[in-house]
Length: 192
Image (tube, rainbow, N blue to C red; front, side, top):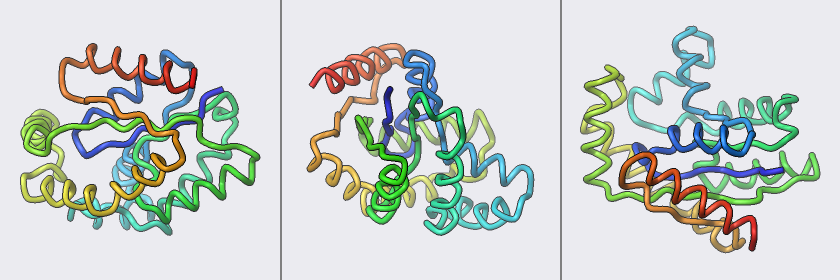
């Protein structure tokens, strides 16, 4: 059984790699970004609230995000393991996730961090914005999201590093190359 999370700055390839890890390990990938976007598209009350923050490049508040993650981790399809993508983003969310897992007598096995240079990420995200027409991907919002990542999420990385479950992988390169590095890193982390 594998319980893990993938973390990294916006545009580092988390979503793509999460799908590939999910397929290879046979665990469900849970992306808070996908859940937010589905709610926005469906114009649910959660989606309307989340959209305000997403369009400004801000994180959706913990009160909304935490409830959504708790509900999702209670679903049957996570019994064989899971891969969280996009959560936790703050140290308060780390503590909340610890509570959720402890309540089920579980813990994380590995935290995978994709690393990438900010300028490379800005270029990637601007390219993605042109392809997909995402309203939350313009240069000002992208740089704001990167600033928030460095400010709020890097302490999360440090917390997991202290626990000895953090594995870092270079997220730059062809998708297949990154996937191979990721799978090797997971294999090494599980063997440790």
